[in-house]
Length: 557
Image (tube, rainbow, N blue to C red; front, side, top):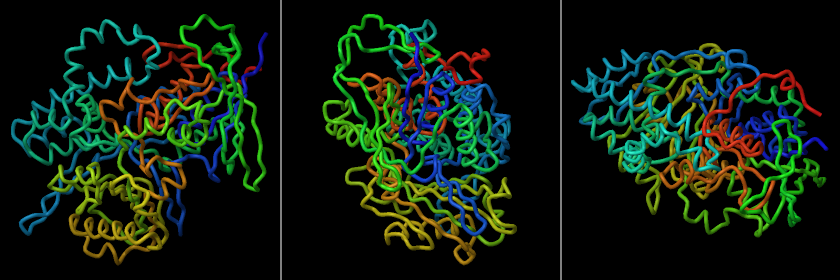
């Protein structure tokens, strides 16, 4: 006996859209519920006076993950996105000192040019960098084959011969902080910062991130940096189109109120075939005592609904899902568990429309303070505080994409990492946000003007919009108002991170940056695949083998 699997996906962010699409193509009858008027989640968009701003991700990382995901959907990155390789990759501005402004470090496109740049700054460092990047590439390959796509449901899936042979080296990379790993190899403080800053993309302090994450340097220093024309909103639009094409029913302005469950009767735990059909379960050593029944939700007019479900996948913030949408007996991660977790940073995001050209800034720029340790201590310390000055990331997509700004204007996206604390306030339009948030934005604008040598930057601003931690908490139900999710410390990475299946409720799964494998758009895509693996009963550690049989192209009844 077969029947269609009724699946509800909570949240229409990157992970929600990706999971819904994979499961719809698997034969599930999928409904996606999104609280906001648009899908995309943190990968949002803002249009004002001819400017189009990405309000979330802006750095295209881990291209292999995108390639693999689109292949799973029977398409390709080339068909879905118009990618441009950036040259230079990015520029690093250092804090002025002794009355002078340091010459910015421009990171070029191409590993050979990067080697020469490092050698010029620190003689002898090019050989160290070659060894460092070789290790990073090897670690990246190991991570993709054995860790990132691993559901960690079978020990033997992890204990592959290659992993076992590499255990001594892997143990060193896990035990040593990234900051120390870098300091043992390079002396120049700016080069150390170039190698350490990817930890921020993982939501953590380089002093707390395992050295395993030096693999990130293989991406920007070795492979170069790309940009999808139209920005990350273009990615959201393509994912939405693919979801609709697969048969997903998307409902926006649908606020989920509760994930409902019931006591699981004996032998009621189903498994699902790759085509979404029920299959009699094999004996289990541990049986969950609850099973999902559906989702209660409210529409934009206040009407309440109930969607019956065999499977529920929450792509919402895990803390919100566990503490607000589930009853106490159904929680795998109760409030006490969250009190022991470390959040990634919060952020003030500043979107600026600027009159005239800004040749001083390439597509990506990083502004690093001299006292790196004090900067991170302010954000992650107890008590925490807003760093002053701050290390800032600036994206100028108009350097590559003329469609994001009017002619003879520039589009600037600024990210100022601060503590994850919604009490710091919310942003707003044209300086209308809370005083502290607008003050942080003002300081960042002045800092960029000073460090990059753009003295009239403030006077040339024609559009301004800010976003603060309170906005993240309100719009995305973000835990502690963080911009990313739990930090990638050792105790919150890989198998130690919250996994993609409920420990208490059969048929309940989790996707997104707050679960395994972690933060960032590529990780969200992988989390969708991990949900698919768990539903299939696939315990393999690497990317799912891509198959394109005839039935994949359409929904199976």
